[in-house]
Image 1 (cartoon, rainbow over the protein chains, first blue to last red):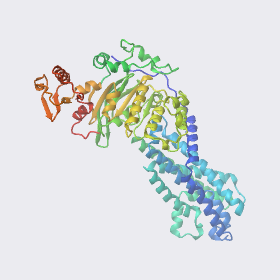
Image 2 (image 1 turned 45 degrees about the vertical axis):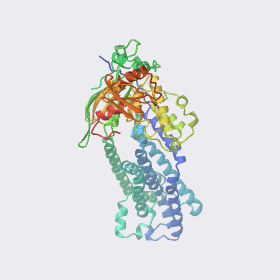
Image 3 (image 1 turned 90 degrees about the vertical axis):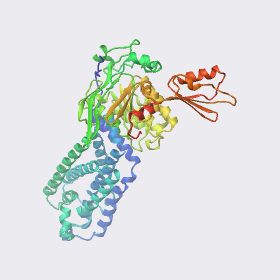
Image 4 (image 1 turned 120 degrees about the horizontal axis):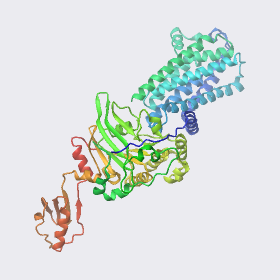
Length: 263
Length: 354
């Protein structure tokens, strides 16, 4: 008769400590792997510089009665959110699964949620840095327009970042390889940027363009940030739409995690 | 069926292995470790005081992917302190089996216990007792060796000093090297160090030496023995026969989702019904007499001065004695016995061996 030995105690590390440890590791890695994020950092301030300059004298109905420069500076505060969350985050997450890093961490008892949480925290930091870069470039060149509702700007920015981070995680879980994540991420980013606030103003868009824009998740975010900053509209509807996208994203992430767990 | 090793049989069959298998006493871990657990007090022990308790107990393990049945009612049992090899051709279900035992893969049916815990229900509790090196797993390319060990040690609750682990596994000079720049052997050393960073009682090593050059493989073998000598039980998944023959105290051959044989490598080799070949070269004028009359000899083949005597396991001794008796002392006498590979091919015939 042989007996099965039972361990008398375990030595679990707290989930918060695990998350902080993983976030620290991810942040260190980011300082060495910044090249793939270069586009996400450079593109928004570059486009903002061009468009805010070109439409400096416009303040017609196509810009909802706002000054073109102010319109683009406010809108481009939100553009780095989509750049970081759709171009950087999914590639990192899908790459980890593809290369077996998630398996390695999972074998060490780390929940996939810890890894996702660390990636989300690091990307959130990049989003803040990216938005800060837009402001830092805009301020000396064009000057920043006065903020009408600071709490509204911060709230809309944070809710929008949370929503797009969730969609970025969903994309990272949905695709099998880093290459697919990169291709799909760019494919999602480009129309969001172009029609969702970073391209032509709503007043010059054709009907179909406007309809597509209404169904893009970045549109309510740029609208809410811009309206809160410039006092140009009611925040209720865009914030509600952003929250709806967030809820949809969370459901999608939960479903994708369940699917991955069955593999 | 592959039950826990019976020491009496081991003593009889493989004394040299038995002396290797006696693990050093595991250093007591405060508040943890089975050495203080209730199970060990009632366990059997051999004459040297070695406990023979079961650390892994699997019965009726079944797993299907869609309509493809990968594991079909697999039973196995691994004892404390042994290196247990799992052999099998590609697609035999080796990785699925060890990942299921670690709770990393859901199973359709079966009773699984590792250190008395259910790998799924008690997964988090078990993780602190189990070390693992998974096939096709990796680390971020830019992560440095020191950072990897420090991070994994912290995630494991800092039960092992990561600087000491660097030193133990010969990684100190690589501390600032990025994972992406390491050689195959260096990566495996790091994976072993990471697998042991929680001071585990059971360590799973899946295809650890795949893709390594012969020197790096032998270096890794020494590390695997070192793990066992530190007191851990090792489950070694491999498709290299020589590796299992060299390292494992017992091995199971997995084929078509079942275990077709499970024993010490020596006993597994004895299962082979292959012939033993004795080869030597005669000098001019030497005539060895009637070797074909010796007991057990089935064939004597000559090609020029090269001679091959085919017979059973006692044939080489009889041939050598006969040659010496007539004054022939060939300097190149070699014996080719059936290997674990021969047994493997026989047991898994019909499949392409990995």
